[in-house]
Image 1 (cartoon, rainbow, N blue to C red):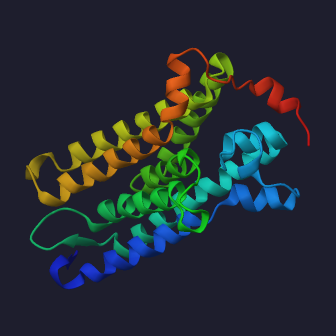
Image 2 (tube, rainbow, N blue to C red):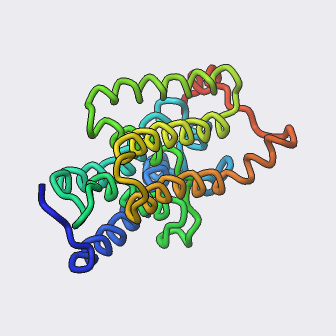
Length: 240
């Protein structure tokens, strides 16, 4: 396995950060809504994301938006995995691809939530974060893709039964984070505390902080009993 000297190759991470941020800035919800002759940022809740797209244009458009945003979150991370999968940080056993997957993911989500192209007012990052885990978790074991798909079905079922869209989505992100953390803890248990591993855990924690903070208004309404219900039954019947 090749070794990666960060002190000499730090510029590669700078390129990844900038590229992934601007990838995150591209908002599929606004692009798709423009094809519908509307601006999703100016209708409904004003949030340019999957849930508002679903409410305003129906379940089919919502699913398309979700898949596009999921790929936006997952594809850059997957590309970094294939570039660095046979590389480890110099003088450590930490795989660079484990690190870059979530490094790329964090900057895509930052770009999605705080896009310079939309005056730093973007979506809430749920679909892109879900996609990030959907792409990243199966990197070591391909069959994990089926487990993640099953978990996504479980999240949809939770939302179907409770009609709490935001809470279901956030619990899903946290659940995937815990799964990935457990995998990394088991993988690197023998090497003890390492700077790269600590930063890796911080990256995964950052994903949760970003998405939960982006939903602070939803959570406040939820605890106040004022959160808008998300009925999948009604959305499935809605056509626009």
